Amino acid sequence: MPRCRERVKLGIVTSDARLREASASRGPDARGIFSARYLWVTIGTCALVFLSAFESLAVTTIMPLVSADLDGAELYALAFAGPLASGVVGMVVAGNWSDRNGPIAPLITSVAVFIAGLLIAGTATDMAMLVAGRLVQGLGSGAMNVALYVVVARIYPPDLHAKIFAGFAAAWVIPSLIGPFAAGVVAELTSWHWVFLGVVGLVLLAMLMVVPALRMLSGGPRIVNRPRWAVQPIVWAVLAALAVLGLNLSVQLDGPFVWLGALTAVAVALFAVRTLVPSGTLPAARGLPTVILVRGLIAAAFFGAEVYIPYLLTERYAFSPAFAGLALTGAALTWAGASWLQGRLGDALTHPRAMGIGSVLVLFSILAALVTTAAALSPAILIVGWLFGGAGMGLMYPRLSVLTLAYSSERDQGFNSSALSISDSLGGALALASTGIVFASLLGIGGVWPFAGCFALAALVGCGAVAIGSRVGDGRRVGASSGR
Picture (spheres, rainbow, N blue to C red):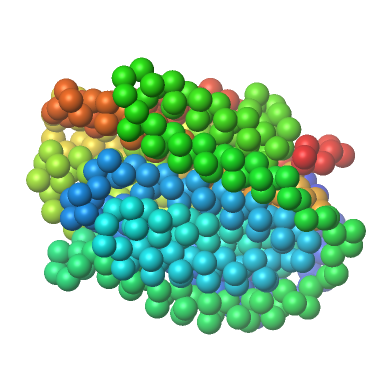
């Protein structure tokens, strides 16, 4: 989902005189994302974002039903963490491929792999097969996200980056309105299998709309001094993905070996990811490294908690799958609304302030879920609280995307875009795997405590995002590379 050169601030490029002259020289047809020049690019890329949003929200809604039908409670967390882990491999390959040859081939290939994953999951007869399909699906989805970021960087001028990212956020609105509820209805009236298989048609339709964008890219500037194929990062990405899978499976060990295996897997994943992100990311060096790290932390906190909300509502409050999904619908709408608002605010809202407000809102929503669960309060408190979490994500995600491009040169757009997506996915995968261990460990106690433990861990990660958010900087590149 997201080249910004001259002085980018706050997700909106500043009104630099040279920038205004460059924009004017392109003519009136190039001044908006829905102008004649960019219309089909915008429609095609937003359609793919729409697809990703629909699939994500739909699967989150139906997974409790799938788990019960396939007797796969032990693999519940892996069904979410698995595709995030395999997505890391797809991101690294697509990032390097895009830097070498542009994003056309990576985008087409990733969509084909994504479709294959949907078909496998949609025809699954046991939980292991469903997880396998989700792994293939994640591989394609991760590569597709990076390819879309590079499409934006190669086609849109810097002054349109914030608008197209806001468009991406808006592409979540329709699936947010219909996705969770529709998925629940389909699962109840027919079968959950069609929630996967039905998305295949949407993928094909989206690709038809992307074709004009690919033609536009094929006429783009020739890549000079293209980098070599980077085999070593792919190996590290595979290692990181395997570590996440190992973290999920460590729950099947006995006694203290559960936590020993879990800590080992986390250490291996963090060691492997060091070469896949800009140097200084793990210690939160100011600028791009912190941008990448914040993305991972906030994704871990939000999504690590979100996947258990429909589960909690169906298990403890007797919600139907359709109505449990409405909790996610509200948060997705506030996400899109806050994303639009941050774009309108422009220079009035600095990047560090957006990070501060957004991370606090996410933390508040997780704490609301924790208190509701532990004290057996009305589910309305959790659902309303989760609206604030969606708003926090809407403030942060577009700014983090624009900042990544602002800190990038044309040579490392693919690497940095890949690093952002890797942090997003790996953070979420590690959080989901860890909450899965917490959930399984507290099942013996019973009651609400497995859910409360998961929300408590997510809140702890959210505190980390609050602590370092102000270190993202203003997006100015001071004669430095991405730190690769």
